[in-house]
Image 1 (cartoon, rainbow, N blue to C red):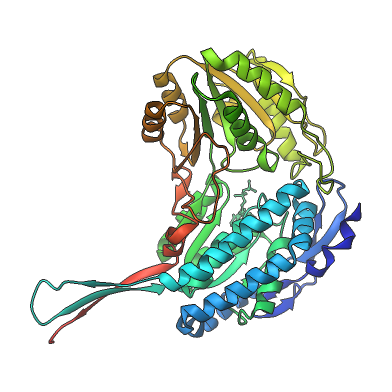
Image 2: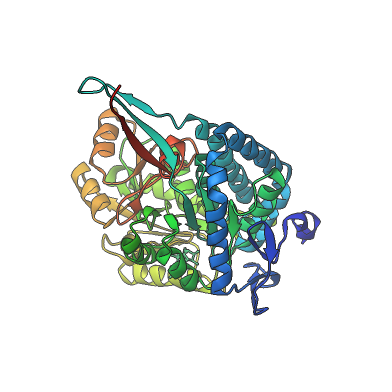
Length: 482
Ligand code: ADP
């Protein structure tokens, strides 16, 4: 494996607090392993509570000067960071594949996507414009201006170790907030690499820290702290709800990107090639480990058989293997529990009468791309997030059936519609309860658009100018006696 060639310049084994690389005061650390080989890549400190508190305190101290730094200056630092990320594109991609397991070509995609947030907010931060409000009475001037919310924290998941952080980090810093980030313990290395490059780009000490260690301890400290004014979390609905409840006493601003259970509706009049492409990417991108992955693929009766045949060929042609090989399509899943969950969904579907078309049960951390057809409408894989490369096809009769099935979930992150009828598309995008809809595409994520869900999938948006708003408070000023 030729990984050692280029990821090492970004490889860290310490946390980054107040501009310093620190190890745990107890000397304790946890290993970070490569999901493909199981081998140890690095280890990260199990920080003590006081060390995490030190990061929060440093963010508080650094806040006033950073908030007063002109947005243009902050933008320049972000642009410098963008340059550094691009210079280290190969290192970053390999690091992400090593800690997460995803195929290298997708890791490159993530680096570009992650860098995109830095690019967008380097500019967007300079456009947090205020408003002048026509006064309802004489002698007064009314205006509203945007100001940074203050110290923010980010808690990020393992499926996109870089991009899930930069979509929080970049708007936070662009807005003038400081940030303490806690990456997932499975994949902390991209976050530490980002800290290294942020330092090199000129982000001052305390403005951005990365803490590692026990999630519940760090989560408790973040939520209880009156210094922390904003929590941005991406992860499970279960943990998100806990964080929201724990943040209530200190009334924090919250952005919650939580679980999904995205439906894809393929109507009879869909273009076959377009629908198959959309399903492939929506289901199998990131080995199926994406919160906007098409979890349930509903195909109308008239196109069902042709769709199954073409889709099955494509699924069967995917290569399972080492993410570091450039032609790998599906790498290892993050851990064995992830494969067990896919197996559970597969077993349940088959027990309910589904037909195994392509693939097999997974073993260890390797889950072959798998397709089952004739899945029952109430199978486990239609109710829970599978988070793996298992596609299940469910047949439907009418438009109303499709919408009823699509909305039969407490989640509402993404959904997908494939059709060539303008009327069907317009009605479906109106009728589906979700924060995002992909029409004739399975690839919707971009830093330029507002990403986020409704219902149990969360609150708030990331990306675009809406993502900046999450880090800004609107302050109203009423100036009398004029
Ligand atoms: P996933 O299924 O993606 O691992 P989680 O919600 O468990 O979803 O994890 C997302 C992030 O939340 C990770 O960084 C994880 O370490 C963190 N996390 C897990 N438990 C807690 C907790 N009690 N408080 C704060 N963060 C937590």
